[in-house]
Length: 228
Image (tube, rainbow, N blue to C red):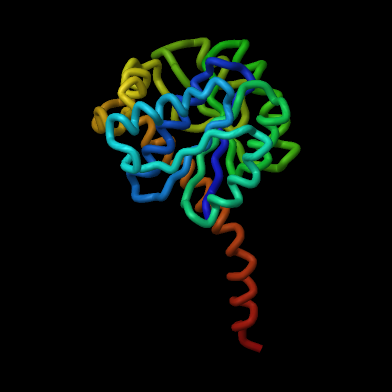
């Protein structure tokens, strides 16, 4: 059964599509069956995938792609859950109906945040919605400049902050222009390492959830085999 990761952020320009594409490809490179769904009206993820198809050939992108209206995301996720290991949803900005639907369909919400006050303030609405829906969150600092005091100030204000930060690296955007990602173009680069580390964190969330689900069963087994 596929795990659904929705990349969400109320503020536009936070790097949602870049993060979504990089997570999807990195998971695919690990042998997973990955689907990507673009419900952002801007269609940036769809443009990227078209370039990828021209570059690698249709059917050889390593990803299943679909672009649709947000209200249909629930039924599409249900259809893909049995076919894939991961589903990545690139949601529209603002916490309107379509974004809310994408968030409610998720098993994990990834929220890219640039180290700026406006990004920080915009993040609170998404965090509140995730909290109400009881969906785990990873807040990812994105486009981080080295040795920035502001970054640390912003980080101190954010809950559920990922250990991995994504630097302000040209390679992220340059790779997308080719229909690829940093882990494909320069797999040994700092940008690629950041993405791989982030994916490890994401995988860890799901592993811990599975362990928690199995814990009651394990305790019950121990109890049943306890000596009288």
